[in-house]
Length: 518
Ligand SMILES: *[C@@H]1O[C@H](CO)[C@@H](O)[C@H](O)[C@H]1NC(C)=O
Ligand SMILES: *[C@@H]1O[C@H](CO)[C@@H](O)[C@H](O)[C@H]1NC(C)=O
Image (cartoon, rainbow, N blue to C red; front, top):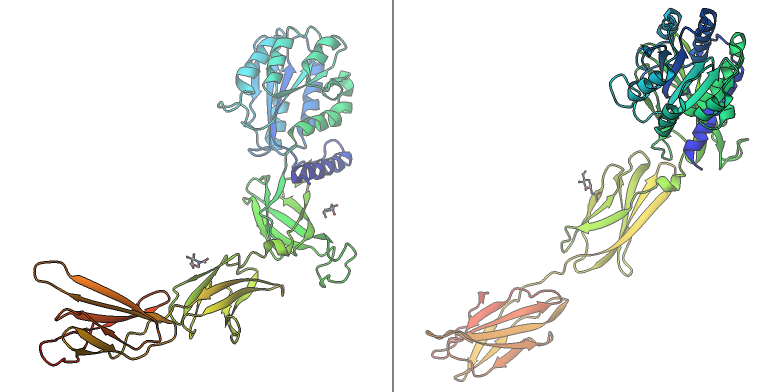
């Protein structure tokens, strides 16, 4: 489900509830909206002073419940006369007190009803987004035109331009005439945005008009983000200016495991109705919620508390993720630093908030004894020692979650082979060009022996002969060996050659059996 829509519904129904129980003049503030509202007020000589003061009190009652400020509602008043007169701009008042006083100070201009000039001024300055003193970028803009409806002037063109630029146009007419012109200029649907009312009865439409404006500037005031299985972050638009605090209450309303009635699996003290409460100072705009239950729907309520004004509370619902979605560790297991008798096993990611400890189990394949090591939840690797060389092990890393659940991942690792050096090479010359070689047998994993002999001539390259012998042979006889040839024997293992031994064949005198490391 689309959280945005849900939020909007929650907020709107909340407003409607508040609105329906609200009597005019209430000092409760709707923390509902974000946007700029420009009132275009006919202040020309054609309006009687009686009508003018009625219009001002109507405006004053209409805007009274809005919270004003940089992330709230901006209200501006533009008077229509011979020349337009900007009484105050959107950013001028951030308290109701200031705004209400400014409205009560507003003086009628008199003169002609030059609505077109006022609309051009509104389009070029007041409602233009991003210019100094203009409307705020990215937020809805509303133009409410209060007119007696008589000789409205050539307003269709400028109004259409404003609507094309995204401004919502609403009209309140205290006269009867020019239905066609007025219904042309409002943003559709006309039945929501065009009001005809007698000047004495203006308060009849206050609530409907306010609701119509709110539908345009309604904002998501509460958002729950970064939801995990046990935590979430609540964000809100600031409404308190400097004093007071935010009172935040949240509790599960429904658990998909336990059901709303709290069946088996409901922990004592966490059933429906058990609310946690936190407070945050006036300057804050978010709060971390922790110790939540996985896979549970929470109702959270934000109450701005101030001794200056009484604010509406805001509520929304959110659902924590199932624990299995949060159980990510281990997502990978890797092996490094492999030696003949040890390997380092590493894993990640670490989830110290959720994981209690890690357990590493390993055994030689196919049928070795099982070894178990337990390591802390902040450790992401360990060295397994005392392993057998050239052996494959199955290593399993399991994360033990605090909830009692477990997640595991296995890898196969190999220790390195050992390559024992050749031991005890003996060389005996027989006749004038043949030698007998004898050596001692070598370790497991031996694939054979590599025998080379060469004679270095003084003025040319070495002449080299080679012979590969199977592993069971422990002696061989070479013939046609040149005098003073160096004869070497190396053991050959699966993946490398071990260290060999060399002897020099002396045919002139009695053979001296000596050997030398390669
Ligand atoms: C959430 O809590 C608020 C404040 O307690 C309450 O008014 C509202 O009805 C609750 N919503 C749901 C869906 O339970
Ligand atoms: C283990 O933690 C260290 C830092 O503590 C980090 O550099 C390394 O990438 C982590 N290894 C794995 C496999 O997550």
